[in-house]
Image (tube, rainbow, N blue to C red; front, top):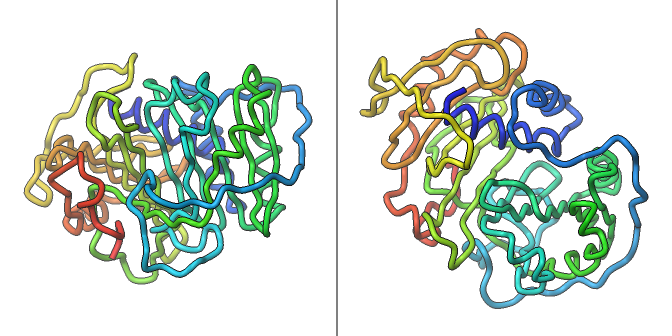
Amino acid sequence: MTDLESRLTATLAERAAKTRTITGLAERAARRGKTIRRRRFVVGTAAIVALLVFLPITVGSGNTTLPLETAAPPAPIGTDRALLHFDVDLTRLPPVLADRITVTEWVSGNGYERFVGQDNDRKAIVTIWLADTAERADRYDAMSNGSGTGNLRWQRDGIEGLTVLNALDRDLLPQVTDAVRFGVTQRCVMPLRLSALPEGARWTECQTAIRRAGTPGTVWVYSGLTLHRADDRTVFIWADSDETPTGSSPSSFAADRQVAGYPAQWRTGSGSFANGLWIADFAGIDLYISNYETDPADWFTVEEASWYATRLTPSRDLNAPSTWPTRAIG
């Protein structure tokens, strides 16, 4: 497995394991990911009891983790892929958790938003889900609930939440949830912009991860755009900083064409993300445009992948989120 495959499958399979939507798409990706990913979202076979409680929510003010969006009116969770309607104050986390977090991942999808505090190997230390309905939050709770985790379901002012920790840290759950800050809107930004979508296509998820302030390395870590075509097939645009986590194998990139002025490689095969266009140095970004299917994906062609690549513009400064496009698409 190449370093690209290791990073892509590990992150996306882990995400899929935590994001089984009603379409079943991510569930299929999760099943595939179980056989190939190096890092697992820690779940067990025995269920533990999730507590449904009402907790105070901190109203945010001042600085935010991602660039602040001041023009957008208040809106429900998961209504705009470009926005996140909360923040997490890491200084309010118990030090035993906060000291291990070096990367924060942010996700905005249809009806949900998520924060994941990760360590240097991109393993989840703290996961916080926000959902638009109790049913959705309960589904995430049941899916992630096991002997290896500690879960806390909570609710406030119509917002459904779920906090997930390692089982050894479960006594800290109330303190983690208290670090959630509402009353702020952040932009789901990345150093990349897609200028257009094909006719009938829609943007269904924004995913971006940045390094915690004061942690060595490039500020930007990775980002992803999930798109649904008019026929509901899924295309995934993955961008990585190429700061490879421990254990990845050497790169096997071998350009066989030029796309958008960059050396590129078209990869084929079976399984999730097997067919895809790889540009190893897209102005400093490791870029992969692929299908998000476990079944044969002959429908995803180099021509379609190239269509997206020619409409992507990279940002030149990977250390300045405030300079990145305010919306990753459009």
